[in-house]
Image (cartoon, rainbow, N blue to C red; front, side, top):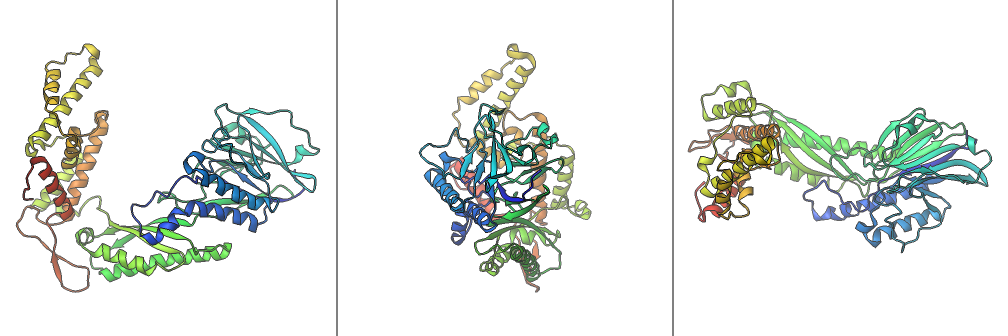
Length: 520
Protein backbone atom coordinates (compact mmCIF):
# COMPACT_ATOMS: atom_id res chain seq x y z
CA UNK A 1 0.00 0.00 0.00
CA UNK A 2 1.13 3.55 -0.66
CA UNK A 3 3.17 5.24 2.02
CA UNK A 4 2.72 8.73 0.59
CA UNK A 5 -0.52 10.56 0.14
CA UNK A 6 -1.35 12.27 -3.14
CA UNK A 7 -4.13 14.12 -4.95
CA UNK A 8 -5.28 13.98 -8.55
CA UNK A 9 -8.07 15.31 -10.73
CA UNK A 10 -10.25 12.87 -12.68
CA UNK A 11 -12.20 14.23 -15.67
CA UNK A 12 -13.59 13.05 -19.00
CA UNK A 13 -16.05 13.75 -21.82
CA UNK A 14 -15.22 17.37 -22.58
CA UNK A 15 -16.82 16.80 -26.00
CA UNK A 16 -15.64 20.19 -27.17
CA UNK A 17 -17.32 19.66 -30.55
CA UNK A 18 -20.83 19.33 -29.08
CA UNK A 19 -22.94 22.50 -28.78
CA UNK A 20 -25.58 23.16 -26.17
CA UNK A 21 -28.75 21.42 -27.36
CA UNK A 22 -31.43 22.26 -24.82
CA UNK A 23 -32.74 25.56 -26.22
CA UNK A 24 -34.97 26.47 -29.14
CA UNK A 25 -34.38 30.21 -28.90
CA UNK A 26 -32.37 32.58 -26.73
CA UNK A 27 -31.83 36.35 -26.50
CA UNK A 28 -28.67 37.61 -28.16
CA UNK A 29 -27.18 38.75 -24.84
CA UNK A 30 -26.84 35.10 -23.75
CA UNK A 31 -25.56 33.82 -27.07
CA UNK A 32 -21.85 34.15 -26.31
CA UNK A 33 -22.26 32.49 -22.89
CA UNK A 34 -23.85 29.45 -24.53
CA UNK A 35 -21.41 29.28 -27.44
CA UNK A 36 -18.36 29.62 -25.17
CA UNK A 37 -19.66 27.21 -22.51
CA UNK A 38 -17.77 24.08 -23.70
CA UNK A 39 -14.45 25.91 -23.63
CA UNK A 40 -15.14 27.76 -20.40
CA UNK A 41 -15.99 24.47 -18.63
CA UNK A 42 -12.64 22.94 -19.66
CA UNK A 43 -10.74 26.09 -18.73
CA UNK A 44 -12.32 25.94 -15.26
CA UNK A 45 -11.14 22.35 -14.96
CA UNK A 46 -7.52 23.30 -15.49
CA UNK A 47 -7.94 26.35 -13.25
CA UNK A 48 -9.01 23.93 -10.51
CA UNK A 49 -6.04 21.65 -11.13
CA UNK A 50 -3.69 24.59 -10.58
CA UNK A 51 -5.61 26.01 -7.63
CA UNK A 52 -5.77 22.66 -5.83
CA UNK A 53 -2.10 21.95 -6.60
CA UNK A 54 -2.87 18.39 -7.64
CA UNK A 55 -0.05 15.93 -8.24
CA UNK A 56 -1.41 14.83 -11.62
CA UNK A 57 -4.52 14.79 -13.84
CA UNK A 58 -6.27 11.68 -15.19
CA UNK A 59 -8.40 12.07 -18.33
CA UNK A 60 -10.60 9.15 -19.36
CA UNK A 61 -11.38 10.07 -22.93
CA UNK A 62 -13.82 11.68 -25.36
CA UNK A 63 -12.27 15.12 -24.92
CA UNK A 64 -12.95 16.20 -28.49
CA UNK A 65 -13.45 15.07 -32.06
CA UNK A 66 -10.55 16.73 -33.93
CA UNK A 67 -12.37 16.42 -37.24
CA UNK A 68 -15.45 18.25 -35.92
CA UNK A 69 -13.75 21.01 -33.92
CA UNK A 70 -11.11 21.74 -36.53
CA UNK A 71 -7.77 23.27 -35.50
CA UNK A 72 -9.16 25.41 -32.67
CA UNK A 73 -10.06 22.35 -30.57
CA UNK A 74 -6.54 20.91 -30.67
CA UNK A 75 -4.90 24.29 -30.11
CA UNK A 76 -7.18 25.00 -27.17
CA UNK A 77 -6.29 21.69 -25.50
CA UNK A 78 -2.59 22.24 -26.09
CA UNK A 79 -2.84 25.65 -24.40
CA UNK A 80 -4.53 24.11 -21.34
CA UNK A 81 -2.02 21.27 -21.14
CA UNK A 82 0.84 23.76 -21.37
CA UNK A 83 -0.49 25.60 -18.31
CA UNK A 84 -0.04 22.39 -16.29
CA UNK A 85 3.34 21.68 -17.83
CA UNK A 86 4.63 24.97 -16.42
CA UNK A 87 3.78 23.65 -12.93
CA UNK A 88 5.23 20.17 -13.62
CA UNK A 89 1.82 18.47 -13.42
CA UNK A 90 1.66 15.30 -15.57
CA UNK A 91 -1.47 14.29 -17.50
CA UNK A 92 -2.44 10.65 -18.10
CA UNK A 93 -4.96 10.33 -20.93
CA UNK A 94 -6.88 7.19 -21.93
CA UNK A 95 -8.56 8.27 -25.15
CA UNK A 96 -12.05 7.26 -26.21
CA UNK A 97 -13.56 6.64 -29.62
CA UNK A 98 -13.78 10.35 -30.48
CA UNK A 99 -10.20 11.24 -29.51
CA UNK A 100 -8.46 7.91 -30.13
CA UNK A 101 -4.82 8.09 -31.28
CA UNK A 102 -6.15 6.43 -34.45
CA UNK A 103 -7.94 9.68 -35.41
CA UNK A 104 -5.59 12.24 -33.83
CA UNK A 105 -3.98 14.51 -36.46
CA UNK A 106 -0.21 14.19 -36.53
CA UNK A 107 0.29 17.88 -37.27
CA UNK A 108 -0.34 18.78 -33.62
CA UNK A 109 2.08 17.92 -30.82
CA UNK A 110 1.16 17.88 -27.16
CA UNK A 111 3.52 19.10 -24.40
CA UNK A 112 5.86 16.59 -22.77
CA UNK A 113 3.72 16.34 -19.63
CA UNK A 114 0.94 14.60 -21.61
CA UNK A 115 0.98 10.82 -21.91
CA UNK A 116 -1.71 9.20 -24.11
CA UNK A 117 -2.10 5.49 -23.42
CA UNK A 118 -1.68 3.23 -26.46
CA UNK A 119 -4.47 1.49 -28.37
CA UNK A 120 -4.90 -2.24 -27.91
CA UNK A 121 -2.70 -2.78 -24.89
CA UNK A 122 -2.65 -1.94 -21.20
CA UNK A 123 0.32 0.28 -20.34
CA UNK A 124 1.78 0.67 -16.86
CA UNK A 125 3.16 4.03 -15.73
CA UNK A 126 4.37 5.35 -12.39
CA UNK A 127 3.92 8.72 -10.78
CA UNK A 128 7.05 9.54 -8.84
CA UNK A 129 7.87 12.21 -6.31
CA UNK A 130 11.55 13.06 -5.74
CA UNK A 131 12.54 9.83 -7.43
CA UNK A 132 10.22 7.64 -5.34
CA UNK A 133 7.26 5.83 -6.93
CA UNK A 134 4.02 7.00 -5.30
CA UNK A 135 1.27 5.55 -7.53
CA UNK A 136 0.86 3.16 -10.43
CA UNK A 137 -1.37 4.17 -13.37
CA UNK A 138 -2.66 1.54 -15.78
CA UNK A 139 -4.43 2.62 -18.95
CA UNK A 140 -5.42 1.89 -22.52
CA UNK A 141 -7.01 3.98 -25.25
CA UNK A 142 -10.03 3.01 -27.31
CA UNK A 143 -9.28 1.32 -30.62
CA UNK A 144 -10.47 -1.32 -33.04
CA UNK A 145 -7.86 -3.86 -31.99
CA UNK A 146 -9.22 -4.44 -28.46
CA UNK A 147 -7.27 -4.65 -25.19
CA UNK A 148 -4.47 -7.06 -24.32
CA UNK A 149 -2.01 -7.02 -21.41
CA UNK A 150 1.35 -5.55 -22.14
CA UNK A 151 4.51 -7.14 -20.77
CA UNK A 152 8.07 -5.96 -20.65
CA UNK A 153 7.53 -3.09 -18.22
CA UNK A 154 10.70 -2.33 -16.31
CA UNK A 155 10.28 -3.44 -12.68
CA UNK A 156 10.11 -0.76 -9.99
CA UNK A 157 11.13 -1.56 -6.45
CA UNK A 158 8.12 -1.69 -4.15
CA UNK A 159 5.66 -1.33 -7.05
CA UNK A 160 3.53 -4.23 -5.88
CA UNK A 161 2.50 -2.21 -2.82
CA UNK A 162 1.61 0.95 -4.73
CA UNK A 163 -1.87 2.40 -4.96
CA UNK A 164 -3.05 1.54 -8.49
CA UNK A 165 -5.31 3.65 -10.70
CA UNK A 166 -6.96 2.21 -13.82
CA UNK A 167 -7.90 4.60 -16.63
CA UNK A 168 -10.44 3.38 -19.16
CA UNK A 169 -13.08 4.68 -21.60
CA UNK A 170 -16.15 2.54 -22.17
CA UNK A 171 -17.93 -0.29 -20.38
CA UNK A 172 -15.64 -1.80 -17.76
CA UNK A 173 -15.62 -5.64 -17.68
CA UNK A 174 -17.29 -7.09 -14.58
CA UNK A 175 -14.16 -9.07 -13.77
CA UNK A 176 -12.23 -5.84 -13.28
CA UNK A 177 -14.64 -4.76 -10.53
CA UNK A 178 -14.18 -8.00 -8.62
CA UNK A 179 -10.44 -7.52 -8.18
CA UNK A 180 -8.89 -5.22 -5.60
CA UNK A 181 -5.61 -4.91 -7.47
CA UNK A 182 -6.87 -1.59 -8.92
CA UNK A 183 -8.05 0.68 -6.13
CA UNK A 184 -9.62 3.41 -8.28
CA UNK A 185 -11.05 3.04 -11.80
CA UNK A 186 -11.15 6.43 -13.57
CA UNK A 187 -13.81 5.83 -16.22
CA UNK A 188 -15.13 7.84 -19.13
CA UNK A 189 -17.52 7.54 -22.04
CA UNK A 190 -20.79 8.86 -20.59
CA UNK A 191 -22.00 12.42 -20.12
CA UNK A 192 -23.61 11.77 -16.73
CA UNK A 193 -21.51 10.98 -13.65
CA UNK A 194 -22.05 7.56 -12.15
CA UNK A 195 -20.40 5.56 -9.37
CA UNK A 196 -20.64 1.88 -10.27
CA UNK A 197 -18.54 0.46 -7.43
CA UNK A 198 -17.27 1.44 -3.99
CA UNK A 199 -15.90 -1.89 -2.79
CA UNK A 200 -13.51 -3.67 -3.14
CA UNK A 201 -12.50 -0.76 -5.38
CA UNK A 202 -13.93 2.58 -6.45
CA UNK A 203 -15.10 2.84 -10.07
CA UNK A 204 -16.51 6.17 -11.22
CA UNK A 205 -17.57 7.65 -14.54
CA UNK A 206 -16.60 11.30 -14.22
CA UNK A 207 -19.28 12.52 -16.63
CA UNK A 208 -19.08 15.60 -18.81
CA UNK A 209 -17.57 18.91 -17.77
CA UNK A 210 -20.61 20.71 -19.23
CA UNK A 211 -24.38 20.25 -18.78
CA UNK A 212 -25.94 20.82 -22.20
CA UNK A 213 -29.72 20.36 -21.78
CA UNK A 214 -32.60 19.83 -19.34
CA UNK A 215 -31.86 16.12 -18.97
CA UNK A 216 -28.45 16.95 -17.49
CA UNK A 217 -29.13 18.38 -14.06
CA UNK A 218 -26.91 18.66 -11.01
CA UNK A 219 -23.19 19.37 -10.78
CA UNK A 220 -21.22 18.65 -13.94
CA UNK A 221 -17.46 18.88 -13.77
CA UNK A 222 -14.61 16.78 -12.39
CA UNK A 223 -13.60 14.81 -9.31
CA UNK A 224 -10.82 15.77 -6.93
CA UNK A 225 -9.52 12.43 -5.61
CA UNK A 226 -7.49 12.43 -2.40
CA UNK A 227 -5.56 9.32 -1.32
CA UNK A 228 -4.19 9.24 2.21
CA UNK A 229 -1.01 7.53 3.38
CA UNK A 230 -3.07 4.50 4.40
CA UNK A 231 -4.70 4.33 0.97
CA UNK A 232 -8.04 5.71 2.15
CA UNK A 233 -9.74 7.40 -0.82
CA UNK A 234 -12.16 10.33 -0.83
CA UNK A 235 -13.66 12.34 -3.70
CA UNK A 236 -14.91 15.93 -3.97
CA UNK A 237 -16.91 17.34 -6.86
CA UNK A 238 -15.34 20.25 -8.72
CA UNK A 239 -18.14 21.97 -10.63
CA UNK A 240 -16.98 23.35 -13.97
CA UNK A 241 -20.19 23.76 -15.98
CA UNK A 242 -21.17 27.42 -16.39
CA UNK A 243 -24.67 26.28 -17.41
CA UNK A 244 -27.24 24.77 -15.06
CA UNK A 245 -30.68 23.36 -15.91
CA UNK A 246 -33.80 22.58 -13.92
CA UNK A 247 -37.51 22.00 -14.45
CA UNK A 248 -39.79 23.51 -11.84
CA UNK A 249 -43.48 22.87 -11.18
CA UNK A 250 -46.01 25.54 -10.20
CA UNK A 251 -49.41 24.56 -8.81
CA UNK A 252 -52.01 27.26 -9.54
CA UNK A 253 -55.37 27.44 -7.79
CA UNK A 254 -58.52 28.79 -9.37
CA UNK A 255 -58.59 31.90 -7.17
CA UNK A 256 -54.95 32.94 -7.74
CA UNK A 257 -54.22 36.16 -9.58
CA UNK A 258 -51.46 36.75 -12.09
CA UNK A 259 -49.47 38.71 -9.49
CA UNK A 260 -49.71 35.84 -7.00
CA UNK A 261 -48.44 33.37 -9.58
CA UNK A 262 -45.58 35.72 -10.48
CA UNK A 263 -44.58 36.20 -6.85
CA UNK A 264 -44.53 32.46 -6.23
CA UNK A 265 -42.27 31.94 -9.26
CA UNK A 266 -40.01 34.80 -8.10
CA UNK A 267 -39.71 33.21 -4.67
CA UNK A 268 -38.74 29.88 -6.19
CA UNK A 269 -36.09 31.42 -8.43
CA UNK A 270 -34.72 33.43 -5.50
CA UNK A 271 -34.30 30.20 -3.55
CA UNK A 272 -32.40 28.64 -6.47
CA UNK A 273 -30.15 31.67 -6.62
CA UNK A 274 -29.43 31.62 -2.89
CA UNK A 275 -28.49 27.91 -2.98
CA UNK A 276 -26.15 28.54 -5.90
CA UNK A 277 -24.47 31.46 -4.13
CA UNK A 278 -24.08 29.44 -0.92
CA UNK A 279 -22.51 26.50 -2.79
CA UNK A 280 -20.15 28.80 -4.70
CA UNK A 281 -19.04 30.48 -1.50
CA UNK A 282 -18.23 27.09 0.03
CA UNK A 283 -16.11 26.01 -2.96
CA UNK A 284 -14.70 29.44 -3.75
CA UNK A 285 -16.03 29.35 -7.31
CA UNK A 286 -17.24 32.38 -9.24
CA UNK A 287 -20.78 32.66 -10.60
CA UNK A 288 -20.13 35.68 -12.82
CA UNK A 289 -20.33 33.72 -16.10
CA UNK A 290 -23.01 31.25 -15.04
CA UNK A 291 -26.51 30.99 -16.51
CA UNK A 292 -29.21 28.86 -14.92
CA UNK A 293 -32.00 27.83 -17.33
CA UNK A 294 -35.39 27.06 -15.80
CA UNK A 295 -38.35 25.48 -17.54
CA UNK A 296 -41.68 25.92 -15.77
CA UNK A 297 -44.49 23.37 -15.81
CA UNK A 298 -47.80 24.68 -14.49
CA UNK A 299 -50.43 22.41 -12.98
CA UNK A 300 -53.61 24.51 -12.83
CA UNK A 301 -57.23 24.07 -11.81
CA UNK A 302 -59.48 23.38 -14.77
CA UNK A 303 -61.24 26.71 -14.42
CA UNK A 304 -58.06 28.73 -14.90
CA UNK A 305 -56.28 26.40 -17.33
CA UNK A 306 -57.77 27.97 -20.53
CA UNK A 307 -56.55 31.44 -19.60
CA UNK A 308 -53.03 30.21 -18.89
CA UNK A 309 -52.84 28.13 -22.06
CA UNK A 310 -54.40 30.61 -24.49
CA UNK A 311 -54.30 33.99 -22.83
CA UNK A 312 -51.45 36.52 -22.44
CA UNK A 313 -50.73 35.75 -18.77
CA UNK A 314 -47.93 33.24 -19.37
CA UNK A 315 -45.99 35.59 -21.60
CA UNK A 316 -46.41 38.43 -19.11
CA UNK A 317 -45.10 36.27 -16.26
CA UNK A 318 -42.15 35.06 -18.37
CA UNK A 319 -41.24 38.62 -19.33
CA UNK A 320 -41.21 39.79 -15.72
CA UNK A 321 -39.18 36.80 -14.50
CA UNK A 322 -36.58 37.30 -17.21
CA UNK A 323 -36.28 40.97 -16.33
CA UNK A 324 -36.00 40.36 -12.59
CA UNK A 325 -33.16 37.83 -12.82
CA UNK A 326 -31.25 39.09 -15.88
CA UNK A 327 -28.56 40.93 -13.90
CA UNK A 328 -28.06 38.56 -10.99
CA UNK A 329 -25.24 36.12 -10.35
CA UNK A 330 -25.95 33.56 -11.53
CA UNK A 331 -28.25 34.82 -14.26
CA UNK A 332 -31.50 32.85 -14.16
CA UNK A 333 -33.37 32.66 -17.45
CA UNK A 334 -36.95 31.36 -17.56
CA UNK A 335 -37.02 29.41 -20.82
CA UNK A 336 -40.75 28.72 -20.93
CA UNK A 337 -43.87 28.47 -18.83
CA UNK A 338 -46.15 25.69 -20.02
CA UNK A 339 -49.54 24.93 -18.46
CA UNK A 340 -49.94 21.15 -18.78
CA UNK A 341 -53.18 19.33 -19.47
CA UNK A 342 -54.46 17.17 -16.62
CA UNK A 343 -54.76 13.42 -17.05
CA UNK A 344 -58.53 13.79 -16.80
CA UNK A 345 -61.09 16.50 -16.19
CA UNK A 346 -63.35 16.65 -13.10
CA UNK A 347 -65.93 13.87 -13.19
CA UNK A 348 -68.91 16.23 -13.32
CA UNK A 349 -67.71 17.55 -16.68
CA UNK A 350 -68.07 14.07 -18.17
CA UNK A 351 -71.78 14.07 -17.31
CA UNK A 352 -72.67 17.34 -19.04
CA UNK A 353 -75.16 17.05 -21.88
CA UNK A 354 -73.18 19.51 -23.97
CA UNK A 355 -70.66 19.42 -26.79
CA UNK A 356 -67.93 19.54 -24.14
CA UNK A 357 -69.43 16.54 -22.36
CA UNK A 358 -69.51 14.71 -25.67
CA UNK A 359 -65.81 15.44 -26.19
CA UNK A 360 -64.87 14.12 -22.76
CA UNK A 361 -66.92 10.97 -23.20
CA UNK A 362 -65.17 10.48 -26.54
CA UNK A 363 -61.81 10.73 -24.75
CA UNK A 364 -62.78 8.03 -22.33
CA UNK A 365 -64.24 5.79 -25.03
CA UNK A 366 -61.33 6.00 -27.46
CA UNK A 367 -58.77 5.73 -24.71
CA UNK A 368 -60.36 2.51 -23.53
CA UNK A 369 -60.84 1.16 -27.09
CA UNK A 370 -57.75 2.27 -29.03
CA UNK A 371 -58.49 -0.10 -31.93
CA UNK A 372 -61.75 1.66 -32.77
CA UNK A 373 -61.48 3.50 -36.06
CA UNK A 374 -62.66 7.03 -36.79
CA UNK A 375 -63.80 7.90 -40.29
CA UNK A 376 -61.87 11.08 -41.03
CA UNK A 377 -61.68 10.70 -44.79
CA UNK A 378 -65.16 12.02 -45.48
CA UNK A 379 -63.95 15.57 -44.81
CA UNK A 380 -60.68 15.23 -46.72
CA UNK A 381 -59.96 16.69 -50.18
CA UNK A 382 -59.95 14.05 -52.91
CA UNK A 383 -56.17 14.01 -53.26
CA UNK A 384 -55.69 13.22 -49.59
CA UNK A 385 -58.31 10.45 -49.74
CA UNK A 386 -56.50 8.90 -52.69
CA UNK A 387 -53.17 9.06 -50.86
CA UNK A 388 -54.67 7.36 -47.81
CA UNK A 389 -56.08 4.63 -50.05
CA UNK A 390 -52.65 4.15 -51.64
CA UNK A 391 -50.99 3.77 -48.24
CA UNK A 392 -53.58 1.22 -47.13
CA UNK A 393 -53.23 -0.80 -50.32
CA UNK A 394 -49.44 -0.97 -49.97
CA UNK A 395 -49.77 -2.07 -46.37
CA UNK A 396 -52.23 -4.77 -47.31
CA UNK A 397 -49.76 -6.13 -49.89
CA UNK A 398 -47.00 -6.11 -47.31
CA UNK A 399 -49.20 -7.85 -44.72
CA UNK A 400 -50.22 -10.63 -47.12
CA UNK A 401 -46.62 -11.24 -48.17
CA UNK A 402 -45.52 -11.49 -44.55
CA UNK A 403 -48.00 -14.32 -44.09
CA UNK A 404 -47.86 -16.16 -47.43
CA UNK A 405 -44.54 -15.05 -48.93
CA UNK A 406 -43.95 -13.90 -52.47
CA UNK A 407 -46.68 -16.22 -53.78
CA UNK A 408 -49.40 -14.50 -51.77
CA UNK A 409 -52.71 -13.87 -53.51
CA UNK A 410 -52.78 -10.09 -53.95
CA UNK A 411 -55.97 -9.87 -55.99
CA UNK A 412 -56.48 -6.45 -57.53
CA UNK A 413 -54.21 -4.69 -55.01
CA UNK A 414 -51.26 -4.22 -57.44
CA UNK A 415 -53.59 -2.72 -60.05
CA UNK A 416 -55.09 -0.35 -57.46
CA UNK A 417 -51.61 0.72 -56.34
CA UNK A 418 -50.51 1.35 -59.93
CA UNK A 419 -53.63 3.38 -60.69
CA UNK A 420 -53.21 5.53 -57.59
CA UNK A 421 -49.46 6.06 -58.10
CA UNK A 422 -50.23 7.29 -61.61
CA UNK A 423 -51.97 10.31 -60.07
CA UNK A 424 -48.57 11.94 -59.39
CA UNK A 425 -49.20 13.23 -55.87
CA UNK A 426 -47.60 16.41 -54.64
CA UNK A 427 -44.63 15.62 -52.33
CA UNK A 428 -46.12 17.40 -49.32
CA UNK A 429 -49.37 15.43 -49.32
CA UNK A 430 -48.18 12.81 -46.81
CA UNK A 431 -47.15 15.51 -44.32
CA UNK A 432 -50.45 17.34 -44.79
CA UNK A 433 -52.41 14.18 -44.12
CA UNK A 434 -50.44 13.56 -40.95
CA UNK A 435 -51.09 17.12 -39.74
CA UNK A 436 -54.82 17.14 -40.42
CA UNK A 437 -55.80 13.75 -38.99
CA UNK A 438 -55.34 12.15 -35.59
CA UNK A 439 -55.30 8.70 -37.19
CA UNK A 440 -51.69 7.66 -37.94
CA UNK A 441 -52.99 4.45 -39.56
CA UNK A 442 -53.59 6.51 -42.71
CA UNK A 443 -50.41 8.55 -42.66
CA UNK A 444 -47.70 7.04 -40.46
CA UNK A 445 -44.68 4.88 -41.16
CA UNK A 446 -45.41 1.63 -42.99
CA UNK A 447 -42.96 -0.18 -40.71
CA UNK A 448 -44.93 0.43 -37.49
CA UNK A 449 -46.52 -2.71 -36.09
CA UNK A 450 -50.21 -2.84 -35.23
CA UNK A 451 -49.72 -2.65 -31.45
CA UNK A 452 -47.46 0.40 -31.72
CA UNK A 453 -49.87 2.05 -34.15
CA UNK A 454 -52.82 1.46 -31.85
CA UNK A 455 -50.95 2.92 -28.88
CA UNK A 456 -49.89 5.97 -30.88
CA UNK A 457 -53.43 6.44 -32.15
CA UNK A 458 -54.87 6.36 -28.63
CA UNK A 459 -52.31 8.85 -27.34
CA UNK A 460 -52.83 11.31 -30.17
CA UNK A 461 -56.61 11.16 -29.92
CA UNK A 462 -56.47 11.61 -26.19
CA UNK A 463 -54.15 14.63 -26.39
CA UNK A 464 -56.24 16.31 -29.09
CA UNK A 465 -59.51 15.80 -27.23
CA UNK A 466 -58.09 16.95 -23.90
CA UNK A 467 -56.85 20.11 -25.60
CA UNK A 468 -60.37 20.79 -26.83
CA UNK A 469 -61.88 20.01 -23.45
CA UNK A 470 -59.47 22.36 -21.70
CA UNK A 471 -61.13 25.29 -23.45
CA UNK A 472 -64.33 24.58 -21.49
CA UNK A 473 -66.50 26.23 -24.15
CA UNK A 474 -69.27 25.10 -26.49
CA UNK A 475 -66.99 24.64 -29.48
CA UNK A 476 -69.80 24.63 -32.03
CA UNK A 477 -71.70 27.63 -30.74
CA UNK A 478 -71.73 31.06 -32.35
CA UNK A 479 -70.63 32.78 -29.13
CA UNK A 480 -67.78 32.24 -26.76
CA UNK A 481 -67.86 31.69 -23.02
CA UNK A 482 -66.46 34.54 -20.89
CA UNK A 483 -63.37 33.69 -18.86
CA UNK A 484 -62.14 35.76 -15.94
CA UNK A 485 -58.66 37.16 -16.38
CA UNK A 486 -56.00 36.66 -13.74
CA UNK A 487 -55.79 40.31 -12.85
CA UNK A 488 -57.55 40.39 -9.52
CA UNK A 489 -60.66 42.25 -10.67
CA UNK A 490 -63.95 41.42 -12.34
CA UNK A 491 -62.81 42.20 -15.86
CA UNK A 492 -63.74 39.43 -18.30
CA UNK A 493 -62.49 38.53 -21.73
CA UNK A 494 -63.90 36.14 -24.28
CA UNK A 495 -61.79 33.12 -25.12
CA UNK A 496 -61.34 32.11 -28.76
CA UNK A 497 -63.28 29.05 -29.82
CA UNK A 498 -59.99 27.54 -30.96
CA UNK A 499 -56.34 28.39 -30.95
CA UNK A 500 -55.99 31.15 -33.54
CA UNK A 501 -52.53 30.01 -34.64
CA UNK A 502 -53.80 26.52 -35.31
CA UNK A 503 -56.81 27.87 -37.21
CA UNK A 504 -54.53 30.01 -39.35
CA UNK A 505 -52.30 27.05 -40.19
CA UNK A 506 -55.31 24.95 -41.17
CA UNK A 507 -56.54 27.71 -43.49
CA UNK A 508 -53.12 27.89 -45.12
CA UNK A 509 -53.04 24.14 -45.61
CA UNK A 510 -56.50 24.11 -47.15
CA UNK A 511 -55.61 27.03 -49.39
CA UNK A 512 -52.57 25.14 -50.70
CA UNK A 513 -54.68 22.06 -51.32
CA UNK A 514 -57.68 23.65 -53.00
CA UNK A 515 -56.04 26.73 -54.46
CA UNK A 516 -58.43 29.10 -52.77
CA UNK A 517 -59.06 30.68 -49.37
CA UNK A 518 -61.83 29.21 -47.23
CA UNK A 519 -63.50 30.36 -44.06
CA UNK A 520 -62.46 28.46 -40.93
